[in-house]
Image (cartoon, rainbow, N blue to C red; front, side, top):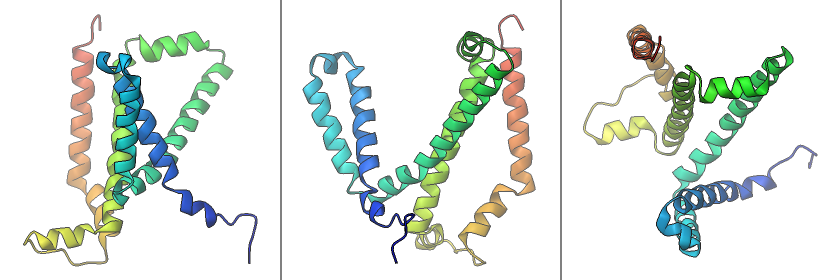
Length: 186
């Protein structure tokens, strides 16, 4: 029975977004180079070829489709934080200057990079796990594949292991200590 919320037909178009995203990003990056500024047609052809080649790899398509909602969620969260600051009377120019030129600009850049890497690596490992499975990959290497309830619980057990959490805390303390000690005028 068809319902208004049935999106089964839209799932056939799940390759369009990764195709367009890769084409646009590659085109923009190529047009930043001096050679391609004069030859934008060649940049477009290279971007189109890369986008078409990416469609032949289902891991790329699924990874981009998995990353996109997370980036939208992060973007909406950042907009809501920005709106909250402006609602409390802080001017937009002050917020933008703090993020881009202030003494916290580098820290903000590190946090954005960390969030992007977490989303990207997490999406890639999830897609590889769904496609091929890490247990199968480890057993092909000749090592003994772990036996247990499954990959998902093993992943979370690894992430929340006390030694790993302790290492993350020590690395974060070191990162902020070094950034504060090397700050100019701090």
